[in-house]
Image (cartoon, rainbow, N blue to C red; front, side, top):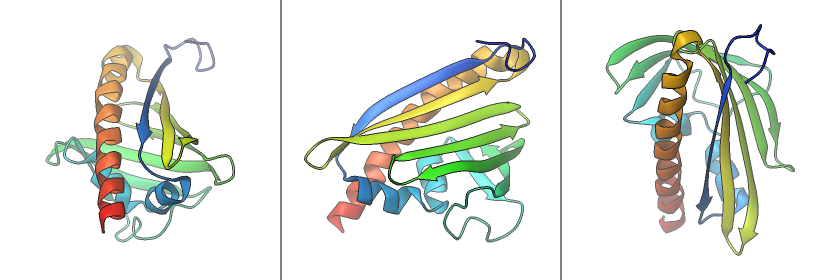
Amino acid sequence: MGDRYGGRTLMLARISTTFDATADQLWEAISRPDSLRFVSAPLLHFEPLVPGELDDEWAVGKTYALRLFLFGVLPAGEHRITLVTIDREANLIESKESGALAPVWNHTIRFHAVGDGRLQYTDAIEIQAGLRTGIIWAFAHLFYRHRQRRWKRLLRSKTEA
């Protein structure tokens, strides 16, 4: 917690796992915004406000305006993602995000090799959502564990193909 956000409660969620994949395999999948839809489903669904905006690779400095749906059907307002860092050498992605449910949702992805064809992967999320911060933080833990299971499934399907 900190006063970085004017004394408002800031919580950090950090969720880690190990993937059976190489950094190159993960970069191939993680670079495409359409992977966000796969790893988020069915808990969250993102629909771009600008059609086709999630068709290319993520771009640093670009803000993606999205409609957010819980369970694919319940409208949860807009969500904005701005990619701040995509560093393939450091295996690091940082985004500044905000939305109707959480005015601050800053996401950092880090990963590194831990053995032959295995990666240690971590999602770290700074969350500030006023009185909802604790509830949103708990949801983030559930959501990112789900996302990491979906990443494993996506990566497995790529290696089996």
